[in-house]
Length: 421
Image 1 (tube, rainbow, N blue to C red):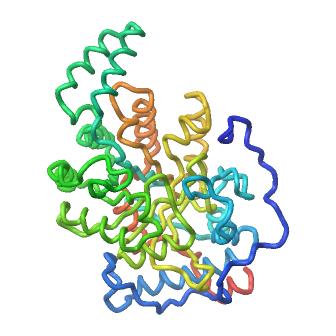
Image 2 (image 1 turned 120 degrees about the vertical axis):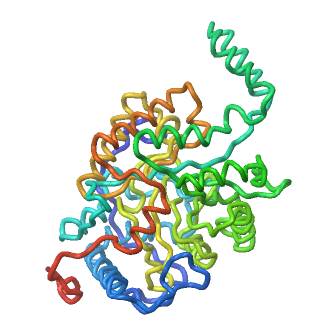
Image 3 (image 1 turned 60 degrees about the vertical axis):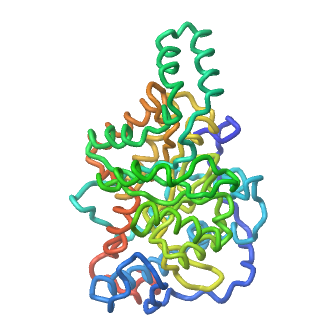
């Protein structure tokens, strides 16, 4: 794999030394299995806990005990290095190149669990899952951009391309208003996905479309079985009032509760953003991935409930970690198409070994026809179908995981994990 600068990413051993202190942290404790769900949760946890829910909480305690055995894996899983608040880029993100955990192609935390017998069974016994997602940053292509693309096509001798773009000049919807085409493509391969739409007001920073203008398209996707989630704006990841305002705006258009979330630019703060999303009533987040590299940011190739080092408790929000973003894979890492596909196959193979999940983000503007990135995405869909993967969106995966998830080996008990197996 090559790093963001184009030079080969070294696979050195993860750095040693004392772990950084967590500001304001209480003494870490095992997650409280009796912690009630937060108000307004879309999860079905308000009812008295049944046997399956109780078993899930016990499994979470055992997972925590097991991961704590190895301090380095525990620090990776909890993202301890991100609690200090430093080493962030200009977008307030924690990038791969500033992490001491270098080998992001190996899901070390998931590997530790599966090697001790933890397992999961997908709905139809699929060997692994691919979670397909799309962030909708752009809907309208301005006339200036279309004019530039026509000129470039003519310069390159692509008369057919220039003519195709010229036919779109009278419509502000084309070509980025391509949601139905994306759903049709996925449906042809037996897949579904999640679309995360922004719900900003006119005048807000990064507001590029009005969510109300997309009501018909959004509801059509919803009725076909595709998830509609929130793509939070630049302030939502750290501003509870802004987050709730955007959530309610999307829910008003969608006419149902929103379950899934990913923040714009992958802006995220550990554990603050998880806390805000939990309070706002989201079922899951899928922001936790690197903006400049592919891989398993906290060593997990499975959805998980984060452990809050400040409170010493497992959180209610579910994280479906992001593994591959189109811009990172095809642009920032400076890979050739062949190298990019090899990197994708390596990550898919790692997830398959551990019956895990690879979450993929492909923006709608990367799925314009014809384009190399569209062909790459279709190649992924073909791979998933041939390998028997469960290809679905975030909500369906998270809802299933909340009820099932990773299960400990038969006959194991919590005391056995605390004392060592």
